[in-house]
Image 1 (tube, one colour):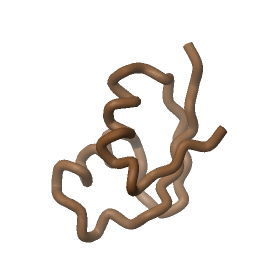
Image 2: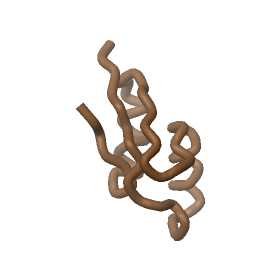
Image 3: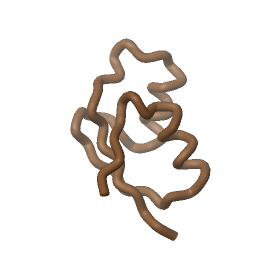
Length: 58
C-alpha cells in the first residue's frame, strides 16, 4: 500500500481536545514535524479531521 508524508503546519494551541488527540495519534507533536504513514482509510480519516493543521507532502 502507498505511504503518505504528513507535515504539521499550524499550532494546536487553540484547537479542541479531539483535534489535539488526533494530532498526537498521528505522531505530530511539534511544528514542521513530518511523519510517514500507510495510506489506510483510518489514517486518511484522521488527516481529514485536522486538514487545516497539516499538509500532505508528495
